[in-house]
Length: 425
Ligand code: HAM
View 1 (cartoon, rainbow, N blue to C red):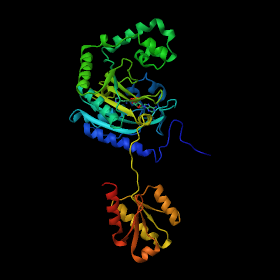
View 2: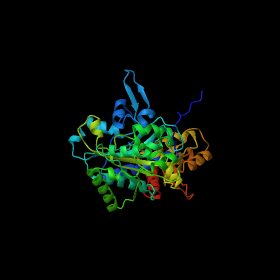
View 3: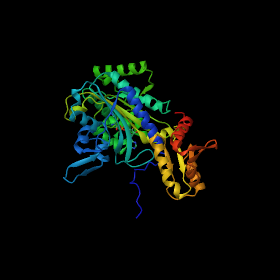
View 4: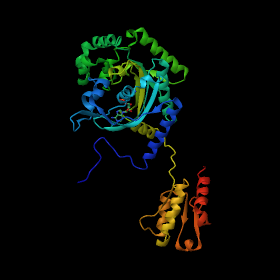
């Protein structure tokens, strides 16, 4: 029996993982700059949380959740997204009693049972931020600005937010009624999915990828005339803030998002050159979520980036993060008798903060040197029986080929100094 990773999942091996670590480094940095603190929540939650939080009539809840009964027959679901779990934690730990806004971020795997294709996986990683406890439109702008700066810090400097507003439960039904009215005579021209959406969630017709549907939907027009004063003023203030902060954006009435929790501002970021699955991030305001999950009425706004797609976008744009993964020192032990002393030298180097390694599969001296090159070692220390007898080791600079001898008693500190000097530390 040969096993393989389940469909829609993948292994990230050394060679690729460095790019992930680079991106994760940028995430921690940007969140530190913006004052967001990390939170880690479980990989699975009670199914009900997602049904209530995301909404019963959404693609995710209807078709895409990994739901299972645990041994006590409780319905559990692998998290398809991070907002509802973070909202649950916010309520459970009474974070509403702390100084507001509470600003949190997370990185981790999400699970959706979708049809796998380029850029779409069943297990994928998200970086998300959530800010609770403020209605201020400047906070919406802060989140869009954080997302923008994050993408730019990774080299995607042409990125532009696509923003929209979807109103609130007070004004949205008026727009939904309008959509139904405009499309009522053209139902038979819409795709099967949109025909179902017509009754249950007509706004989602606006972001259908089917060309015929989007052509017809473009006749619907913007939500603007239907917005209540509060939603209209909020959106104006978000745009003004973005202008003042010099964050580039376009207004796109087709951005409606696929979760029921959104209110007012919604936005997405799209990348070029990665195929149909080109949304590399999205988010919005969700002023009713905390309450619908059983907490006190608390507004919120957030964003999540898909890291798998982000890495595809970086590759498509020719962005290769300069990741240095060089070994500090490879200790070459050509004779059996010098292996223990070599292991001691390796150990001393590591304790001095220098990455070090040695041979564990019985290679000859020349093969050990070749292996050191493969590991991109900055230097090797050769410690044979002859060197041992003389109480020295030979150090070779692998870039310049120069070689010198140092007393064994000082070897670790002298090698550490050398490695630090050539690696610019
Ligand atoms: P979302 O738009 O569903 O939003 O997901 C955010 C990002 O996750 C997408 O833009 C995409 O890059 C990535 N993504 C989604 N599904 C997949 C998949 N199957 N394979 C690969 N990448 C995928 C949310 O999840 C909201 N919780 C965002 C949010 C946070 N809103 C407010 N706060």
